[in-house]
Amino acid sequence: MTRILLIGGSPLHPCPNHTFLDYAKYLLENQSKFSKIKIDTLLVRNLLAEDLAFGRYSSPALFYPKQLVEDADAIIIGSPIAKSAYTGLLKSFLDLLPRRIFAHKVILPLATSHTIAHASALEYSLKPVLTELGATQILPSVFAVDDQIQDAEHSNLEITIRLQAALQDLLQAIAPSKNANQNNPSPLLDEIYAVH
Image (tube, rainbow, N blue to C red; front, side, top):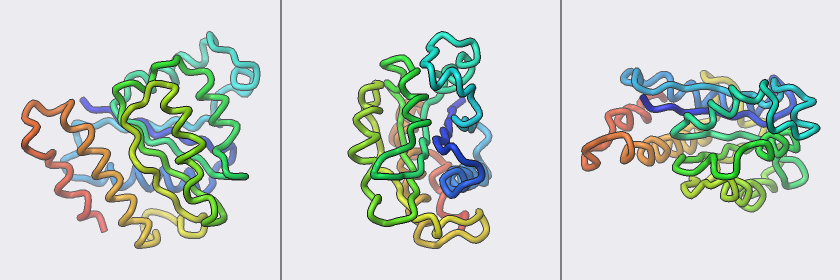
């Protein structure tokens, strides 16, 4: 079974960034042939604040979140952008992960902000950290301005198209390691554009 983990790095909930993650999950879950993919969501804000603040690497409360990361074939990681950087909450969580935990995983970053000026922030702030954690296959991030993000039924068409394309790239990147016959694209890809 292929596993996809969504990590939400916002300290607030609900918020545009978590709505963006929820929308990505909605697009993936609404594929009719998606029974062989398991999707989990981890909101960092739900972890123990003391573990994050004091860097408690060995906290028993972090075992399950670390296991989710370890077991995932792909990770969709989201953060709001403020002052041209991802959240300190997300940074605290990433600092507690083993150094090579993102090796052999496909990573798709999602970012939101109140201004288009932060559109490329994840490219130079988050990607080096992901690389330090072993990531070698980091897809181009998908960025949305907060007011473009609504719910799954009323999302901005441009954002929908860009997110669907990114999810297709994610599924294609996972497929070679999961499918014996790499010449045949995954049937999941055929339907990703049929959602809207």
